[in-house]
Structures are given as C-alpha cells and as structure tokens.
Length: 170
Image 1 (cartoon, rainbow, N blue to C red):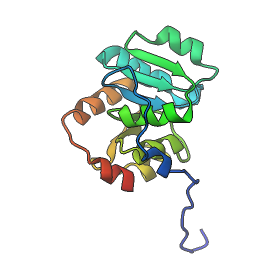
Image 2 (image 1 turned 30 degrees about the vertical axis):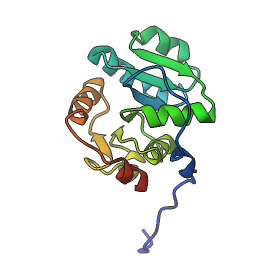
Image 3 (image 1 turned 90 degrees about the vertical axis):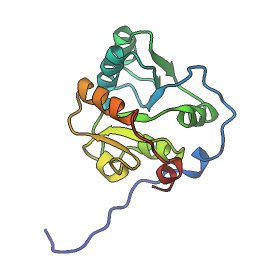
Image 4 (image 1 turned 180 degrees about the vertical axis):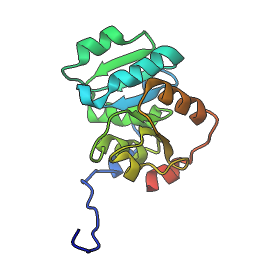
C-alpha cells in the first residue's frame, strides 16, 4: 500500500533443543503427531476423524477445554497424552513419522519445532503453514482442511521420502 519492500519477522523458536537426541522413548511404535492446545480453532477433531478412518496411530500432546469432547470422539488408535515435559516433547517429535497441523494460524511454532527435530509437516495450506512448509520437500500442504484430505496426504506421504536434514535446515 505504501509501495515499500517489507520483510517478515517470524516469532523466535529455540530450534537447537529439538536437534539434541532425547532419551525419552515413546511407547507407541510408528505414529503421527500433533502438539497443540486443545481448543476448537486448532481443529484437532479434523485430525481425529481422519485417523479414526485410516486406523493409523495419532499421538496428540497438549491439553485444553476440548479434551473431554476429543476423548469421546477418538478411537483407540488416537492417543491423547496430555501435557509433556520438555524432554518428553522432544522425544515425541523425534519419534514421529510426521507432524500434522489442521488449523489456520498466523505462524505455527509447533510446525517449526517439528521441522527442527527433522520431522516433515503435513499441514492445512493456510496462514503460517505456507511460510513454514516447502511442499514435497519438508512436508505436504493440504489444500482443504477436511479429514479426507489429510487421509489422502498421509497416503501420499507414505510413498515419499523426506530428508531430515533438509527439514531441520528449513
């Protein structure tokens, strides 16, 4: 509007701590991960509905007002672990196949944390996700934020290979 070039200043994220190997081993085998406050605009229910259908394991780290409703919605393959210590959180990130983000945020610090741990991100292609995820290189951007779209993206993800080092550098 003022005919000036501007730069975007992103919120600070301590990316180095996610590169240090955690001693926390998750008990869930192969799993997908989301880390979030459990509030409606984060759209955790979209991810739960997707995983209720595909039967794969989804681990949800976080707590909030929607916890009871989400617990009722989730099938046994969807695990709500609640809050986690810093060491546990790093371990959850490092052990995940991919990180999922269904909401629209201005930025999305958890997506950066996941990338810092070398984990690809599958995210709704709105808001900060478009700045954080390089499609097909550090993750997959989902055009619509519907459960079936996340299921298709997960199916596609499982046919691809992602370089952990590229995810970390991004």
